[in-house]
Amino acid sequence: MSDHPPAHSTLGEHALEIRSKNAGPFWVTMEAFMKDDRGYSIAADLINETTVAALYAVSAESVQIFRIPALNVVKISFPRPVPQGSLCDRDIHAGQHHVPLAGLAVRTPQHPGVTGGSATGSL
Amino acid sequence: MTITTPNDHAQQVGILVPAGMLGAGFDPATIERGLSLAPDVIAVDGGSTDSGPFYLGSGEAKTTADAVARDLRILLRAAATAHIPLIVGSCGTSGTDSGVDWVAEIAESVSTDDRLDLSIARIYSEQSAAELTEQLRAGHILPLPPATELSAETLASCSHIVGVMGHEPIAAALRQGADVVLAGRATDTAVAAAVPLLLGMPPGPTWHASKIVECGGQCTTNPRSGGVFATIDRTGFTIEPLAPSAACTPTSVAAHMLYETVNPYEMREPAGTLVVSEATYEALDGRRVRVEGSRFEPAEQHTIKLEGARTCGFETVSFVGIRDPHIVANIETWAALLRTVLTDRITQTLGLTSGDYAFDVRLYGHNAILGNLDPDPRPAREVGVMLIVNAVDQATATAVAKLANPLLLHLPVPGMAYLPSLAFATSPAETERGAVYEFVLNHVVEVDSPTSMFRIQNRAAAHV
Image (cartoon, rainbow over all chains, first blue to last red; front, side, top):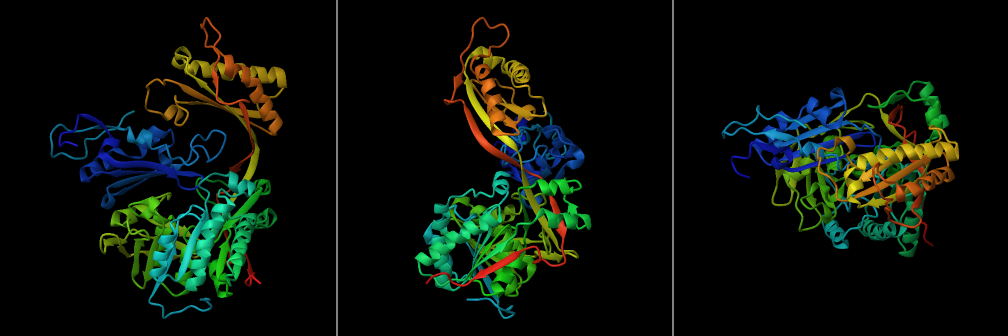
């Protein structure tokens, strides 16, 4: 990745890995493992309860976010909208639900040296 | 070694975890390597809720008997050779009594074949709805988020209910002289924590190490490499992979606290809460990591988590592929028409009302997995249509699927000048899935004793 990424990129492009998984039958949890401090700043600013609620059609109050700078990780947990294994559950392990998160648009500053604070998300 | 009393003189305790799950397989050489590190126990998980409600609902295992026997043969020999206990948790995937008996019969058969002199204990964790109803009425059952209040009807509707044990029943079985402990549903961590706690290791490092090892190689740089070895002492623990080619790094170890957990800093056990927010992770060399600073806060009230599943009907599935570009370009219109026409036909032909059945139309290749959440608007080249029908009995579910058959074969979109014939994947198109289940409990029971809900059955060596 260059020092001057395009004006629009996705969160996934700044990450080593973005993954999702059940945390028991009634919760889903996701982690964004970011590449570096700069990627972490982008994720920490971009991901909040409102962003996640809009991405996954859940209530913002149900979303828990953990920002872990030591690992360059932002972790998200919320109750599964559909319980595991029910008729309308299309992802038994919730292992494919990271894709909307990874696709979050990042508006990156054109001038280097500014990290965080300017990243915004949209669908 | 038979553990009968706590040993305050142990300076460190080694745990050999051969794999993330019994029956998943591992390289026997990794067990040899683990034995050379002088373990005090071999611990392995036998299941989880991760694969869905079917296994608890039906009491059937996800693994095959051959795979379990293969792993047990190696582990029982290793335990007998090293004179250390072997502990298996959540036997038979969901930890039902039938799952414990299934693993125990395999273990006894292997033990007899190989002339191993081992005392095998079974710990049953299945709970009766009647007894739990008494606890419910006494106000001892509380919901965990996002669950709500429990009703006696919900308890009674479960085909199986298990209590999730902590380390205490396992420790009790070891104190009674068991060489092998085959536990029903247990926390992932309890199987590894029982022996270190029995030997007087501090609970903070013990529970943290037990969480890190619970998925075997998942905490290493190569999760498919097999198991791991943890050494717990008075101030922390050290962890390394069993496979020489794999490595534990501070990041790979710390990151495992995130895996399948809601909260990465705190984890509740029946006896209290593991807190790792102050934990430090230090590389000792290229493949070993030292962890210190983990704490365990004892709870004022012991709680046992409940898991329960019940049948929620029978299912029949049909699958058809669509390549016709015109239909694929209008796939949402086609699916909406399918739903409408099928619902009408069910009403007219079978006389069913909406409470008698339900169906789901999934458009694989279009948006089956994420539905309206999918951010990618690109059109598909082909679409796989899965129709899943749920009804109170198998015959009704299949009758609905059969009514859908001509529609799945020939339904056009409005305005098409020809009758398409779509691509069924199989003949017959319908597959009966049998009974299906749902998880309905997400509650804890407040208990006076951490062992009272579990039943230990100890048998002396079975061989003659």
